[in-house]
Image (cartoon, rainbow over all chains, first blue to last red; front, side, top):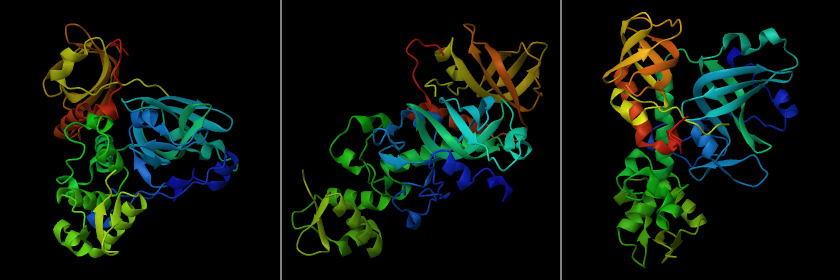
Length: 268
Length: 112
C-alpha cells in the first residue's frame, strides 16, 4: 500500500528504537462484544490538547497516560501551520484548534526526496496523522507513520466526535452500560473531583465497569453474588462476566466469597 | 507544543470571545470587496483583508479575531466546498464547549 510508504521499521529503529506497532482500532468499534481492555498499542483518536495534557506515565520514559490509560499510538486531525524540512525528517506544526504540536516524519534514506509525501502536503492543509507519542528533552511530539491530507471536511468533525466518544467511553463507560454508570456524575470535570469509586473505576473495560456497577447497585451483599445472577441481571454472557471478574479481581476491586464464582466488592 | 487553543464558535458565542482568535465554519451568504457575510448558526460579518478564494454558497472556515463590534477580522479564510454538513458542524461546536477539557485551554488573560 503506497499510503504506508513512510512507515518503515528500519528508519524508525534508527530514529530511536521505535518498534512501530500495528494499527488497531481498539475498542471503539461500537459493538459491545468487541469491547476489550485497551491495549497499549491501540490507536487512539485524540485532540492535541489531550496530548499536551497527557500525564507522563514513568519519569524519563516516553509513555503517556490519557484518562488513566497508557497511550502510545495516536491519530490526530489538524491544520498544517508550518512545514520545516530537515536532513533527517520533516517537522510539521499541526494545529487542530485545541493546541499545537510538532509532528516529525522521518525520512527514509533509501528513498529520494521526491518519493516522500512533502509535495502533496502544503501549509493550511488539513491532514490526518497516524503516529506515536514521543518526548524529547521534555518536549512532546508525534513521530508520524503516515500523514495524509483530508479530502472530506466531515472527517475533521468526525475526528473530534470520535476523540470525544473514546474519552467518554473510558471515563464513563460505553453506551450500553452507560446508564448504570452514575459514576462520574454530571459534568466531565467531576472526574477530577470524585475519588474512591470513580478513581478505582477508571481504566476498567466496559465489562468490568458494568459488573462493578451492578454489584454496587445491588447493595454489595457480604455473601456475594453468583456470576449466573450477574450475567442474567446485566445481560452479559457468562464469558463476559468471567472476563470482567478476572479484571476486577486482578485489581483487588472484588473478591470471591463462598466459591470461585461468587463475588463481592472489596470495601476499602 | 503550545497549550493555546483557537476555540470553535458559532454566531451566538461571538460576544463571549471578543478579542480572541477563533475558528468559525459557516456558509458564505454574500461576498463584498473586503468582507463576507457568513452564516454560522446566525450571521457574522467577516472582514477579509486578503485575496480570499471564498465562494458564495460554499462553506468556509474562518480563523480570525473578534472585534468589539462582533465582526471578525480574518487571518485565514479557507474554502470548504459545498459538501459541508452544517448541522454536524454546529453540533461539533457545541460539543467542543461541552467537553472543554478535550478542546479548549482557558486563557488567563483572555487573549491568544
